[in-house]
Image 1 (tube, rainbow, N blue to C red):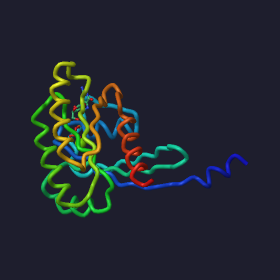
Image 2: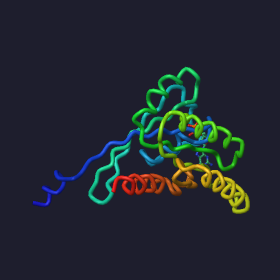
Image 3: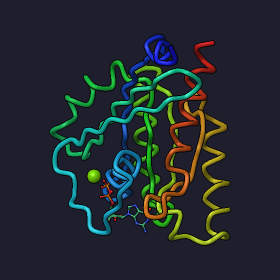
Length: 181
Ligand SMILES: Nc1nc2c(ncn2[C@@H]2O[C@H](COP(=O)(O)OP(=O)(O)O)[C@@H](O)[C@H]2O)c(=O)[nH]1
Ligand SMILES: [Mg+2]
């Protein structure tokens, strides 16, 4: 009897873009999220990395397909096509390398042109930075968020320690279900 419920479960599929400067930890984040694994020496992503993850929240099965774009120019066309039909973009920057924020701005502008895609900003490598520095970065990011309605949240993660990895997706799910209801 109990299994009947499983068949009635709602199942939804979402395409997610994962973007950000080279080396900020896109592959590491996806690898931690999907395989619960971490490598100190990831090889640079040369093509496009594809990952999928299923999460069950409140009786709904969420199927996420995530695409890690290496950022090379030759993928620009693929990217433009891919962005269509994506519900959200996770834009990552490295908390310990402030200049990786530049790419965040570029992505926000690009996504704005391409359509109405929700943006979650993710600060990576939380294990590498101390409290004082965090406050400065947080203030800065919060200012950016205030001026931009597409950005629905900001979260700090560490793929090395596993800190906040799943929370990033729960934030996304919360936001999606809020919009739908
Ligand atoms: N200390 C630390 N290093 C990380 C973390 N995430 C990624 N890295 C390292 O940063 C480097 C680049 O990561 P990678 O995932 O390949 O970045 P990508 O180019 O954005 O896909 C690798 O050497 C990772 O081991 C983290 O949370 N903490
Ligand atoms: Mg990569």
